[in-house]
Length: 275
Image (spheres, rainbow, N blue to C red):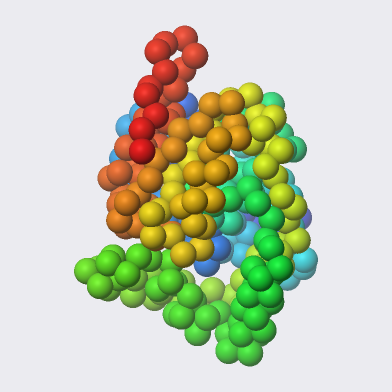
């Protein structure tokens, strides 16, 4: 693995590079960092050149305490891609990382061969979701990031996984106990402000990946099944034992799904989508 840090207007932007081959960016979601993809990186690095950043304010990427947007976070990805001399790539985002992926596809479609949404959505927040996020902001401002994540992270997993793998849940909580409250607040504000981007799914010319969790309490399976009908070419994979964290709950299945999706090539027979 190679590591790099870029100095940007938003702060120091850290990212990892694994392997060689077709360039693929793996983007983490809210309340985690790029290490969430460790098992996928180990699986995929033999075939692909993986770029795995920490978003500004997450992990080892330092963020200036200023307002940010999903679009600004997409611009950060462009800086990494250009620094790696990549003309086009595949981009796969988990949860909030999927929102950033859609913003990137909207602004820089010519830089993408394909993209994927992992436990994510193209819909904007409805009123109930906005109110819930505002309550989360108030909680974070009052009790801090560690307290919030200790209560929020267990809800990312299915009940069955939490019961059988409490060590994984507790480890994820411990690994992010030093998260800055201001970063979580800025991310939440950015998610509230993001627009609906179903039009991006409709306009994008390349294939789109959807990975959904049957027990996902944050992005219901029905929503992902509805969205996957919009692109011209979709690949949908359902983690039948997972909540919102298929990368950890069913890592081999998720890794194989991503690998199968990335193997798409117009010059050969298309891999058969399956659920």
